[in-house]
Structure formats: structure tokens, C-alpha cells
Image 1 (cartoon, rainbow, N blue to C red):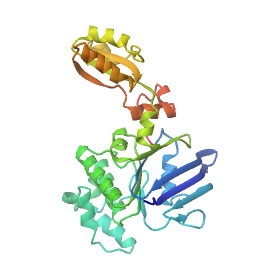
Image 2: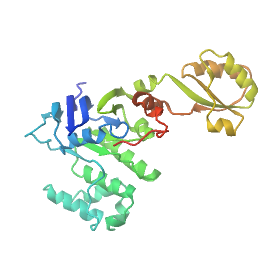
Image 3: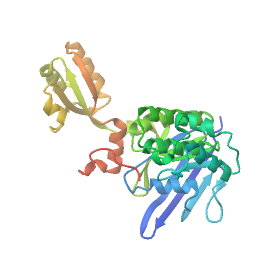
Image 4: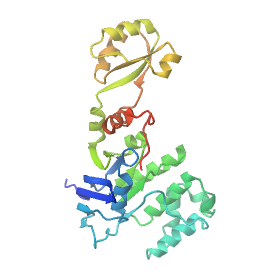
Length: 321
């Protein structure tokens, strides 16, 4: 089946004074694809999202959006919607009034307003003033505004920011339904669980450059060795078996859970070596109560590719500006 490109960027660059925000970025998104964009603070994610929304123009390179070559003098075509740095809302208006005003500005009727609010879980508060909304509720309303026009390309900057579990579920459902209907979705996130659940491909930016772009499975496979937490019914026997298993070794001391619980053993090795370890533990009659990565594979790959894990000020996955 022929795959249709919604976004195609080749060698795209953008500077703000002496700051090189994007440095020869290549970027591809297909119709019906959910594509994640991640990176440390200052990596260039917001700048790239802004280019897709037409909020800025690239200094160099080629950028095609929905089949249109955009640049100076050529605006982003109809069919693109979304937000960067949070949705723009009128705090003195209600959600229904906000969306009705937006529909009017775009020359559309207000017939789809109630449906959009219901889709994002704001139907019950559609007549409340937005000024009293939490961050998560504002994010939901921003998504409702973006989907009101039935976009072919949806661009979202941390859409799950500030959401509770129910809100996250609603946003995930809307994004999945849109992609199933052929809409291309590009969103930034610092939550690897969002990427794992929604995205088929991901692009990682660091200091304005692409350090990885491709399927999530490929990213996870490039992780290499990981640290794993192992809890068993017989820690002494488990430690002995770990020492006898090829490519597996005890990790350096420092994991808090290991210090607090002597039954926990933190070990290091490639994912494929765990099969042999599990087989040996089972053969020795050692009950396995817990076995999982200390840092999820996707997050470990992110930290390795961006060098964020080397900064003691960034112990985990950092934000995504």
C-alpha cells in the first residue's frame, strides 16, 4: 500500500540570533502515524513544532507539509492544527464559548463544539469559566480546539501535561481515534509511557540535531546493557546463580531499593541474557518474585543518546522544551 507523507523535512535549520535551535534536521511523518518528539530542555522540539504550525519559518532546508512546500511567502496549508507552549484560551469564557469563538474565526459553524468537548471529557464543565480550570483541564480544552476543525496534521506540545489518569486515558483515546482515521499526529512528551502506548515512531533531538529517528522497537533494541531488579525467594542462591550466568553481573552498589531491602539484587546485562538467567533460577528451584528494569529501556536509550544521564541534576527523563 502506498504510504502518503504528511510531513517531510530535509536539512531544516533555524536560528535565533546566535542560538542554533535546529541544525539540518531530517524528519518524516506519514498520514495516520503517531510520531513522538522527545529531547532535553533546549533541544529544539518547540521550535520544530512551531515550524509545523506555521508559527515560524525555517532559515534553511526543505519542509513539505500536507504536500505543500512551506517557507517564506508560503504559509502552512489548511488542515494543520495544534498548540505549542500550552493552548491559547480566553479565561473569562466557558469551554463552549471558547470553541464557538474559534469556529467563528475559522468560518465554521458551532455544530461540532459539543462533540469535541465530549471527546476530551469536558462535557460536564462546558459552561464553567476557564479561569478556574486546572492545567490538565486546559490541556484537554486545547485538544478539543485542535480537533474541532478535523485536522489532517495534529501538532501537540505535551498534551498529557498535568492530566490525571482519567484525563490521560481520554487524550490517548482521542489521539488513537484520529490516527486510525488517517490524521498524522506529532506530539512532544517527557513521559515514555505515553510514547510506548501511542507512537509507532519517535524522533529524539539533542542540541538541535536528530540523534535518533525510527520505530520504538529499534530504539529499545539499541539500549544495550540495562540494570534490573531481581527479587527471589532465596537471595543467597540467586546471587550465586547470577555470578554463574554469562553476560550477567551484579550492578554497582547504589540502588536505594537494594540498600533498603536485602532480598533485592540489582544486576546488569543485555535483555537477551535474562532468558538464560531465568531458566537457571527455575531449574534450581528459586522462586522469582520480581524481575524488571531499574530504568525502562526507552528511557535508558534516551539518556544514553542525549547524555542526560551523565548530569547529576537530571536523574531521570527531563522536560521537553
